[in-house]
Image (cartoon, rainbow, N blue to C red):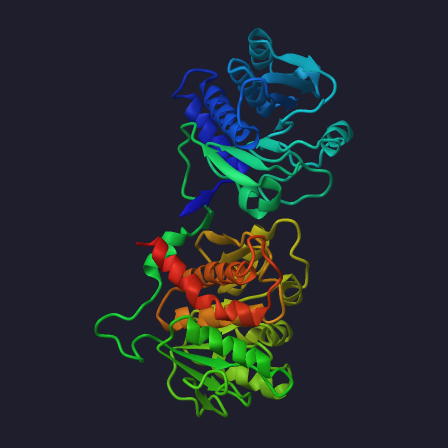
Length: 474
């Protein structure tokens, strides 16, 4: 599991580190790692190091010092290093002296570098780039390597409220920060440089794909169709039959031993292995329920949701089910069985009465704590919060799953994992990972650059995605 650490957590770990190592050692370690990554990037992009040109954008904080020390190391390897000091009177004195001693130059324009190092602000900065820095960054054509994080992006929330650096590579010092997953498109590739920090247990974390593959439920030698998990699906309607097909199909593909469907939609034409009934009471025994996709919001739909939530079975509530809960939260409050809500930003606002806001982690954690259940907040960086547990995050690597019906597939996967007896937070986070991987496989099936996809191909690629996760575990 990969942890992401807030500014306060990193600062506390740095303070402890300073008691164990000589003064200046952490910055030297960071600078060495930064220089190593820059050198490797120069080789990859230009075929060499000597004679290449690197421009440093240097602010007044420690990140400016990291950039200056890295520049000195690169200069000693034959790189032409030029530094623009955005606050000359507050530039890191020792780093600047080291750069000059190595033959680096202080300049006032970017020139035409092969690479740029962003050392404008570090984890202390939360505001957009100031006008002069924004002007310099906007004029650049060269790839940018960010020191610790892209300047102008909030380190804890990943929010961007104005001009900000968009890096090709970000070199994280000591540990990953929330910005590295919440604002991944602005970070580019992430390279971690250890500097000796002793970090606490994370409050934000991502599950490892190999760990997911190793724990994905598969049939054992003595399993049968009942012991593998029986998933109940109450979704779709005459107006939205496709939602039932997608949700049910996802439960089938996610290795449920059996899927039972309650409703009027025709799911058997596509999935004849499903056992269909007209009502919840006639469905038979299940081990989890999924309610909501295309189910409607009328009185009959509310009654079906209430019937499901009155059981002691794990339940996933999505789409129309969330609209019903927004109107009547008492349907779910106080429920003790595992319950997962899967809102997008608009549904979150209906549930809470306010927008998600810039701090998505705090928002999803607050809703989970207030309602005492698991909440999956959809997005490129999908967040899963459960009371008393770290928030789990899945960065999809793209927005291929941002298409109609994709959420119906996600609900089906979560329900199948819950039916197999997996915990709600794990089920939701793992489902998000498999869902994102299936979308990426679907979009890249016939091209190396990816193309728009839809929910049906996403569903068709769910089993290959699970197979790939399982392969990573071997």
